[in-house]
Image (cartoon, rainbow, N blue to C red; front, side):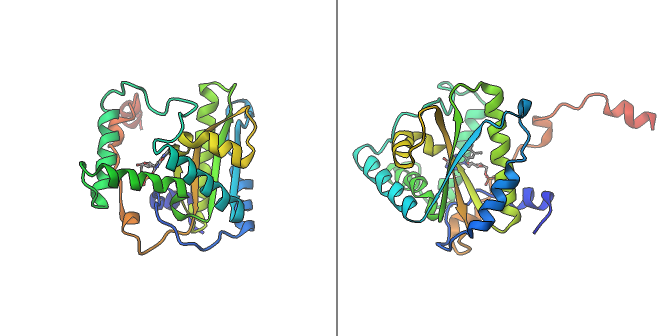
Length: 231
Ligand SMILES: Cc1cc2nc3c(=O)[nH]c(=O)nc-3n(C[C@H](O)[C@H](O)[C@H](O)COP(=O)(O)O)c2cc1C
């Protein structure tokens, strides 16, 4: 077990997993604790489907059939990005993709290579557990933030237990297949997936480190200098 700061510092999106199963008790404990995540008016708007074993194999088989018929997947139920995404966000999005594909040696012109890597999303990158995170489709933006808080809480709790994760918006593009395979009621909108398992320590892709902007680009500090002077 590690502390929160260590879990935050060591967590990375892992994109290659060992086949070793995740003990059911460990997953249950993580889910019990993640349920304590705060939410606006305690609405707890997340609704999560965790799948492993034969049902997971069945889901992945169905997803392969969908992808074979339509490599671009299914139209997501919500816009993942703004259609005219502005900078600096668009620049960061592009830099993130370039970092990832550069790291695994897939050139920009290698469209097939990029597509093949992207398709690994739909195998949960080999993880033994896949989670599909949904939200009641009547929820507003405030509650989407709540689901994000749940997501982060879940990933850090997994990290604390030596497990790794990758959040995957890619699963929004398989919503119909996922809904039918896991019998997800229509009232829940498919937001994203999470791959969960033990990271493959030999996999080069798992050595990727994505940087962050300094806090000055995200936070405006007001009144702290005066407070420091007054002390
Ligand atoms: C909501 C969400 C959706 C994401 N979707 C994907 C995805 O579909 N595929 C993927 O490989 N990574 C996905 N990521 C991982 C991000 O690319 C990653 O968090 C970011 O580049 C920072 O890298 P790090 O997690 O290793 O620190 C997603 C992350 C979040 C939080």
